[in-house]
Amino acid sequence: MTLHPQATQYLNSVSTKGPEFLTNQKAEGQADQVPIVSDEVGHMLQMLCSLTQPKRVLELGSGIGYSTHWLLLGWPGAKITSVDANQQRLDAAAAYLAESGGLDQVDLVCQWAENYVEQSSESFDLIFLDSTKKDYPTLLKQCYRLLRTNGLLVADNIFYQGKLLVNKDTLSPKEQNNIALMDRFNKQAADHPGLDSQFFALGDGLLIARKIT
Ligand SMILES: C[S@@+](CC[C@H](N)C(=O)[O-])C[C@H]1O[C@@H](n2cnc3c(N)ncnc32)[C@H](O)[C@@H]1O
Image (cartoon, rainbow, N blue to C red; front, side):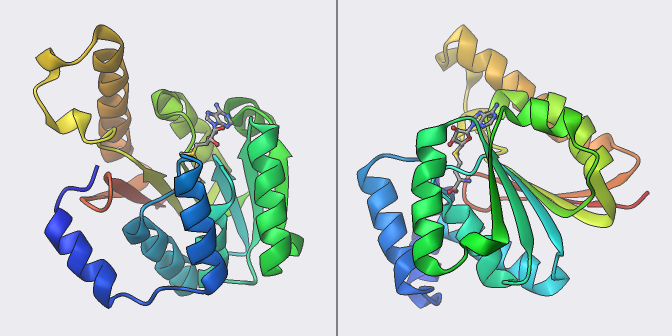
């Protein structure tokens, strides 16, 4: 969901387009109905990486590697571990990354995100959370553990396709439950004593949280 369609349309018209391979990947992803980050979120990922120059990045929810490319555009020196449970999507991501020359920077891991974060003892400078939305509350604790101090947690779709902002009575019980989980995640992030959490009405809503302790 785009909150301000006219503003988004205008900003996209004046924003730099990024390299051709990204435009092609976006078009192919949309044609195949594969979920990918919005342009606004892509630009924000690029900016955050270019400002913070993260050595190690963890991406939960690789999809076809579109957001991975935005992260690399911001800081090509980043070493990215990107996790997705869908091998077919990872194969597509590997092909796109090979084409752009980014594959050497990316370790593609086929695993459930929750298992990966539970088992990992690595430290990351930036974690991009974009897997199943209902898992966000359970992933928060482990993402916090894996972040270095001053590292960033970035979570996409915190408005849950805009459904968090509408009258919940019109939604199915399953959707209401998922929305309650996203609301819980947002409140957990806001109240977390070790995080400075800021929420942005960008794309479908974006959390950017810095680990302060
Ligand atoms: C929104 S898409 C990711 C889009 C990608 N970040 C991009 O913008 O190019 C979500 C991805 O998360 C994966 N996924 C969903 N739940 C998962 C889980 N629990 N563990 C690992 N991957 C998961 C799906 O297979 C899907 O490819």
